[in-house]
Amino acid sequence: MGKSDHTGSGGPSLRLLRVGENIRHAISTVLMRGDVQDQDLNGVSVSVSEVRVSPDLRNATVFVMPLGGDPDTKITKALNRNSPHIRGLMSKMVHMKYMPRLKFLLDESFDEASHIETLLRDPRVSRDLDHSDDGTPSEEE
Image (cartoon, rainbow, N blue to C red; front, side):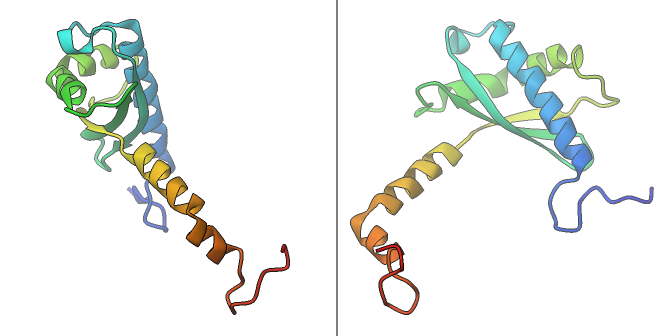
């Protein structure tokens, strides 16, 4: 086993990224078809934004964002409750020696991006961005 599971920069290897993307597509397909019969998931549209697979391929963290949000985490709890069933359906689409255990988490990157966008639109911040580091107005003005 000559190659590492991670690249030199500390991030996941290309293999882990590929496996995560295949799993993401399979879970999206399962959820889109409505193969999971759960009262909390009926009629709910869920986006699977990312899947992070552990280096040993035994566990996968699935980041989801339900349409309209999930303030009381009812949908993510339902997905975790149905994780073994989703895993079984997924195993018919993704062929791996070991199918990873799935853990569903709410993807908060959308909220973070919105918060950063709000901060950047603040007049005080935009005023600071319009000036160069030495305190003089930038050439664009």
